[in-house]
Amino acid sequence: MRDLAGRVGPVLGSAQACRDIARPRIQTIVDKFSQVIREASSNEAERSDLIQAFDRSVADGRAAVASGKIDCIRADRQLADLERSISGPSLSSVIGPSPAAAATAANAATAPTAPVPTGPLPRGIGEKEIRFGIAAPFSGSARELGRQMKLGIETAFNRINDAGGVDGRILKLFAADDGYEPSRTPEAMKQLYEKDQVFGIVGNVGTPTAAVAIPYALERRMLFFGAFTGANILRNDPPDRYVFNYRASYAEETDAVVRYLVKIRRLQPRQIAVFAQQDSYGDAGFAGVAKAFRSMGVNDGAIVRLNYARNTVDVDDAINQLKLAKPPIKAVVMVATYRAAARFIEKTRDLYPGMIYSNVSFVGSTALAEELKLLGPRYTNGVIVTQVVPAVSGYSSAVLEYKNALAKYFPGEAPDYVSLEGYVAANVLIQGIKRAGPQLDTEKLIDTLETMRNLDLGLGTSLGFGRSEHQASHKIWGTALDETGRYQPLDLE
Image (cartoon, rainbow, N blue to C red):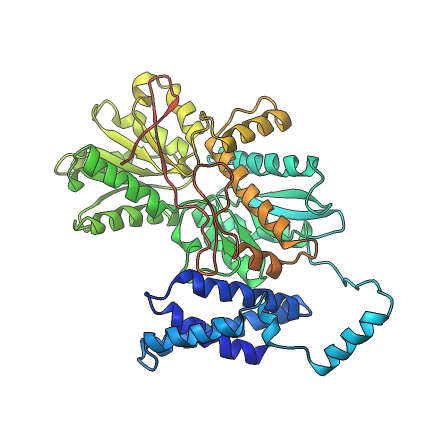
């Protein structure tokens, strides 16, 4: 297998480096080789070792093209030769069984079938359950984000558990409170890993906390799935093997709203400021705005950034900066949590009656609306929030399914954009677990996720992953609050 990886990898790598070679041709062979690795490996450690060897050989192939050792005509010819050599149902057909394996197979044909030894089950997986963990704020000023994310995941888990679970196993969610403080995240992750013995992490909330949680998960080769953050630290290129995202990125959200402000609302870029949390979450959103400016050919060096400290609603310094801005600011892209965002709007609405306020999805749409409704109609009207899920007031099949399940398992809880995101992310994960089959482990689940294409959950956009694509959705939905504090659709284009 190691020899085969050394022969197949460079061919695929050189093909990847050539833009004219169709990606599906390459992906088909990658998928087949991943299947062979799963079949040939006797344990998770061996499988991981083979995957790393394969990845190194793929990188060698890309480097060969970059250095000029191989041109794209030769790369295409090599790929075609490889395609012909494996034009059967499985790449394993080109390996051929070893003499010992062939003898074993011959004996098996006449011998009575014996039970297949399964060995010890992976961490977090029992005969009747699979354990997942979420580290999120369940206290502090951002607690509603953690509560809603957990609610959405548990709604999806309850729904599949009522149907018998996955391969007879029910899904359980264990929660640990980090208060949206990175200093508390290591202990929360340790609790989930060591005490609760979870198989993987799903739905963690926040960027600064993710910056701590991701290294913890990667060191233990543990799945880190569907976090509630659009920051680029979860979107490396190539992607970290164990990190998967459902949602669009903050860069995509801010790009969409900046283009809306410039092209639809006819603002000059210098009239747009950024109100941002003073940490990696705010940095991620600010970087997205800056990237949008550059893509439109505008200098990003003069963007006004208005800061506030995480887990506070002290926005006075930001407002003082806003007053000093020349020319006057007419729109603010907000990269904040709901209480700080509401306080900023409250304190600036009278100063700037025509100000356009826009928020990224992490703000907590329902919580923001509730805060603003307490202040009155003129504080809610026109406030924009970009979303990474469809409108919770809509009638798509995914939203109707979510609302029915929420009403069944958590009666009295109102539909919410954050819990809908948790519900969708959990359902993407459930699809991966189903496809991976009953002999589940981390590496097999990741290999399976990387082959999921064109998944239709009824959102109005298809979802999928690949070896070089660990983000399922790139779709942005626009919404804006009306005078009653309800979100209405907003066409961003």
